[in-house]
Length: 316
Picture 1 (tube, rainbow, N blue to C red):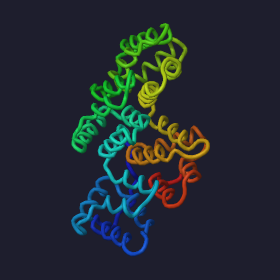
Picture 2 (cartoon, one colour):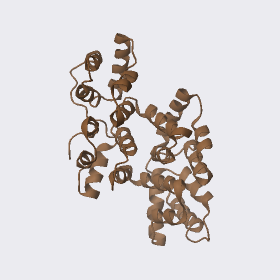
Picture 3 (tube, rainbow, N blue to C red):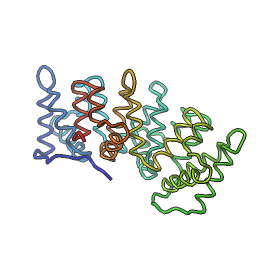
Picture 4 (cartoon, one colour):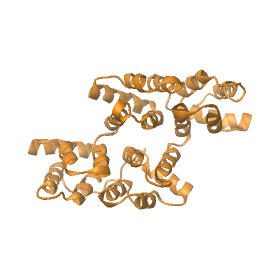
């Protein structure tokens, strides 16, 4: 698993807290100092900085950051300050609230995470918001999309690489009967297989399906389903084979055409920096013949741009 490339940190968390306090003092904020410190600290270090800041200055660092920063920079920095499961819990909670509903974001986060990541962020979700993740899904999602998400967050799935070849062929046949061969679509079969099988198994099913029927499951999903249900199935499928390629595509879509989807740009860069950003950058360059850093540079500006580029690391 790739981790954030943190340069040698010569300052202690207390020193960092003191530098941040100084950056907030006086007229205006020394935003460059805030970025230079926080963008180059990993989750454990950021947690210690928050603890030291509260201890020394009797003030919550997140509240202070919120009052000192604005716009996309504020959103990105506040999102970055949490650890991985806490951040996922907050993103999904906001995405499943009526006034900030974003089913695309909720679907992306839930369907791109491993079973163990889902279990940990479900615990954070309940501890932080005093309700179960399933309750949020029940109240906001609908139809087959809701059924798939509920199954996906509750089913334990194997996370290893071994696959049962007989079961792979059986599932490929079942999906063919449920989709291309059938008049209409048997969504229950898609939900069962996509929520119960491991990532390695689904990747093998996709390959077997292509060999047996000359079509990719991605094309079948596109033809047989629609809306958020289609997005959920495609996210599960694509992340089973190559999560980095999936997120490179999401980032490309966020920056393509007129205007930039900053919500998506921030969410993906911030949530993947400490997981697999190195691989996402490689996939982006391979697929679009342009570095991710250059793409972000051309679509953003100011301190917001500086923060995202600091998270991305070297331009390669």
